[in-house]
Structure formats: structure tokens, C-alpha cells
Amino acid sequence: MKTGSISEMVLKRSVLKHIRKDKNIVKSGAALGNDAALLCIGENDDITLSEGFSDSCELTKAVSERIGLDPLEMAYIRAYNNMSAAAAVPFAALINITVGRLVKEGRVRTMMSEISETAFRDSISIIGGDTKISGAMQEDAVTAEVVMLGRSMKLRGDNISESKKIADSKNIAESKNVADRKNITESDSVADRKNITESDSVADRKNIAGNKKIAAGDQVIICGNAGYYGTSNLIIRYKEKLLKKLPESFLEQAVLKSKEELFIRDMAEAAYKYKAKYVHDISNGGIYAALYQTADKAGMGIKVRHEDIPVRQETIEVSERLGINPYMLCGTGGLVIVCSPEDTEELIRQLTLVKDKMYASGDKRTEEQADYKTEDQADVSIRGLQDEKTVRLAGEITKERLRCIYSEACLINRVIEMPDGDEMYKEVME
Image 1 (spheres, rainbow, N blue to C red):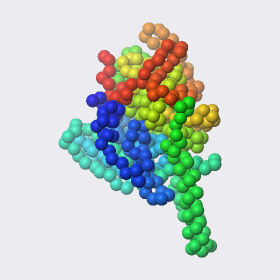
Image 2 (cartoon, rainbow, N blue to C red):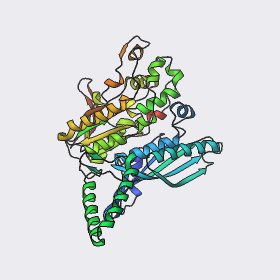
Image 3 (spheres, rainbow, N blue to C red):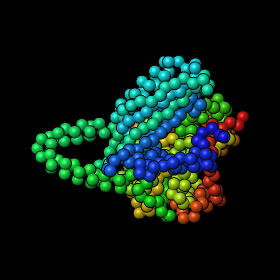
Image 4 (cartoon, helix red, strand yellow):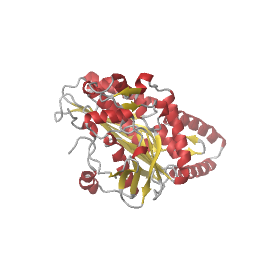
């Protein structure tokens, strides 16, 4: 089997097929295209669980030092992204770390110190986990898994819940409840709490991922450049090889500037606020895998225009030099969104506003980086980050269960194959 996420065929026949579900508890569980599980723990109470994984094979020492991201942080980001895609906000996390025998204590201590600070910032309590040394892996290897527990977002009116405000909201609510209880009778309090709980539950559940059924004709929106994270990773790992063909300034522009670029929480919250039916975060297997999984989740087909898949020129050039498919390259930080045709225009407008805020504090390309010539002197036009349309209407859900990429201009009509591994781990061309 290939390195990366297991193929869909193997996943279905060797994993999902053997999982038994208690329908009284599991509302949404293990399935292709599900980013998290939704559990019913009471009449009006649900809990969402998500998981994220990373290791030192993906984040080598050079990559970690260059972009300031270790395997535990990447696992945390992916767990958070899965939670956000499922229309939930995390409040607790379990941390599992496994290391080889040569890994120093200081590295484990540093990872835990940094993730504790990040979790505290996000109002997430670390409630347990497992840390072990294994003799069954490379002696300097590290694997990390983060499991998060969360609750559904509350999307009423113009107010959208944000993870960073949860702690403050809880404190305000608690103090208000204490004051209210002093001024009302016990019977009134019980009645009020029941009404509030029921109305909140009804309002919340209308916005829970999966409650709105995907239909043929629904529009597919892609947010974020295909393979951006994977490109950054490959540039660091194969920089000497790439410098023989491409300018250093050009390559440096495509390297991840901040780990915050990998979080999808703001985009996912905005998507659900403006009537998205389904949100799926892009990760291992790239945009092609995400589109395939989206169609599988819908139980329908999907048609996407090749030219409307956002992708940076750096990704195209790097992929060409290394002999990989940029559309099957890890895209952590990106999203696939499905919505009704009538909601598409406003949703794209709002998502673009969120992206613009992210770019406002980002770096801009210099004139030198904006135009260059490759070895064969072919002109390549590079747009500035501020001009890139990274939120695009890319296609639609179809009744026919065919998953395809098409382009009338480029005469492309390609079937999206089952996801199988990730191009980030592929042996590159010499």
C-alpha cells in the first residue's frame, strides 16, 4: 500500500465493513467523506468527535525547523479542521504521542509545551492521552494523534460562535444565570431552561453538518489553492534539486509563512453561516481525493471544471520538475463546499471577504518574483497573492454517479480515480 491515507477500496472492505453502529447513539459515524462523528448523549445534547494524525515522515526535521511546525501541531490542526468541517467547535482534546528509542525527552517536552499554549489560546482543555516509546518504528521517528471533542456551532442571525470567544461566553452565561436564578422561582427556572434548551437545540440542529441533504444541481465551491501545504513541504525537502531549474525567490514565495494558514475554522464558520450544506476539508490525497469523497458522501456524481480549481503557479512548476500530480498533493488548509444554487453568490462573496482578511496581513510578491523565465525561456506570468481567486465556483453535483474533471478549452474529460496515498510521499524523478 502507498504512504498516506489508505485507499477507498481497502478502507471500505477491510475497515468500514466491520464497524457496527448503535443508531441510538451514533448519528453520523465512520464513513468516507465524514470528517467527524456526531454522537447523541442525551435528548437535547450532542457531542462531536474528530481526529488528526501526523508523523516525522511527513514533517521531517528540515521541514519542521523551516516552517515551525512539528507532528503534534499538525495533528492538532487536522483534528481542529475536521471538527470545523463538521460544524462544531472543540472544547477538549486527547493527545497521543509515540516516539522511537532515540528521541530525546526535550523534544517531547517542547511539543507538549507548545501544544498546551495553543490549546489554551483556543479554549481547549487537554484531558488525557497516551505517550509511549516504541521499538516497532524507526528509532528517531515521532507519530502524533489528537482526538477532539466538540459541540455544534450556534449560528443565529449575524452572530457566529468562534472558538476564541467560547471561554468568555461561558463566563458571561454563568454569571447571568446566577443573577437570573436569584430573581425567579425554581418552577419558573425549570420551565425557562426547558424552553431555552429546546429552542436552542432546534436552531442548532438546523445548522449541523449533514442535516441538509445534498441534491443534484447543488454547486461545488473550492476554497484555497490545491496542494499548497504539500508544495511547501516538497520545496524544503528537494530545494537543491529544484534550484537547478527555478529561481530561489520564486520557490521561497511558495513556502508556508504561518501555521495559521492551515486552519479552516474561519472559512468553515462563514460557510455554515451562509447556508452551506456540506463542508469537507482537503488533506491527504489532495483536491482530487476531497472531490471524490464529497461525491461519495452525497451518493451522487460530481463535475468540476479543471480551470476553476485554484492552484498556484509555484505548485504547477514544482510538480512538473518532481514528476508528481499537483491535484493529488496534500492540501491541508483548503475546503470543498456544497451549497444550493440560490445561495452560491452570497456564499462566495462572504468566503472571499474572509480570505481577503487573511491575505491583508500576508506577504506580497515583489516585481522580481512576479515574472521570471524558466530554463527553456518560456514566460510564466505570476499573479500577486492579492489577485488570486482562491474561492471559486468549480462545478456541481450530478445525478449520474460519475466523478470527473472537464475542460472544454483544454479538451479534458478525466475520471477522478479512487484516492490512494498522497503525492507528497512519492519517489521523485531524478
